[in-house]
Image (cartoon, rainbow, N blue to C red; front, side, top):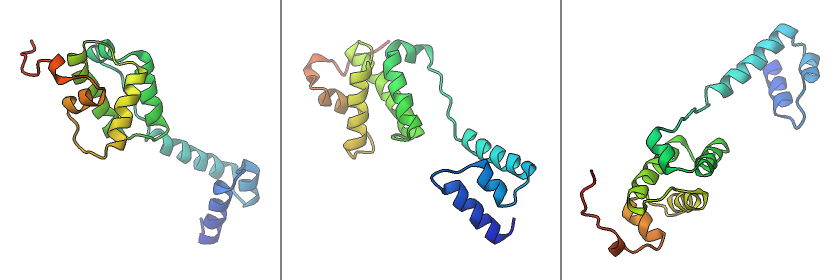
Length: 144
């Protein structure tokens, strides 16, 4: 495509109401239009992130909590690295709480991680965040 045609193409694609008809008016053939649409679809597919919970993760996270986390990833409120970090911290938190991480607790974890501004968060920090006293847990206890 020549430069002016590419600029026109961008205007149509980025407009409030892009359509195939507008693209055809620019002189695109059906073949060019199909290739262009396929390239757009391919570009979005490469960004997909498929994640299946392990058996341990399924025992720790409720379906609602995991669904909420996936939703945040999908709408780009969190990235893949934070997504995995949250799952890892949830597994560790479960060891001390001895209960499943549900959606409200997942929301607390996510909010704490996002808004605390800290890069590294420990389970102890999370437990303190949930107003649970450290004395309720033996952090030195061996876990088998």
